[in-house]
Image: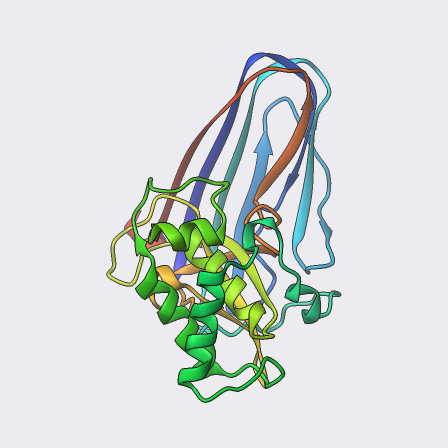
Length: 278
């Protein structure tokens, strides 16, 4: 599939701020199944340094704006050819051991409800402890259990909602599904991480106009495999992978700081479409 992305993120400040610095994970991962035809990341009036590869194997750009300004507008434009890898991440070069992704964070702190969900799935498959290798059937069962437990309902949670809060609420968005799945997997001894990226269409063929997030679990004999509980599928050619982290905050496409006490507002516009549709 040949996908075209137009992604605009505008930060507006109530008063001018100085020394804006942002870390950008806005470049497609260099992996099998993703070939970049063209890609650009720009911000007028700001400097964007050459990319480096972090320990997760993700490409990172650094944006700096030294002069006082009341807005920063980051624009991403590109074209990527994708292929269906059945969710398996191949060709990705990273330095960090998968075991580093067993660590829970504030967003993935286990609760009794998540623990019961994880242990219930494991018991249903005859697993007796968390030392058994991660298997594909276990990962699919966990993902399905999360989808069953949390109804996809945009606007019901926010960026800081934790996995435990979302499960208790029984509704949420892709970030919540991914966080709950990650937490449950780690409880069973499976390294798991959050992935940020783009999605052309969901499992029903409905177009998406927002960034998407899903989980990757480390499975015996396969390595990292993606699971999108929101759409009850593994990533296909409709997905573009950008980067990963311990949770959504760690994997965020844009993270930054600035000097000044101004209030910040953010506007996002994102369109992902097939090339032949233009």
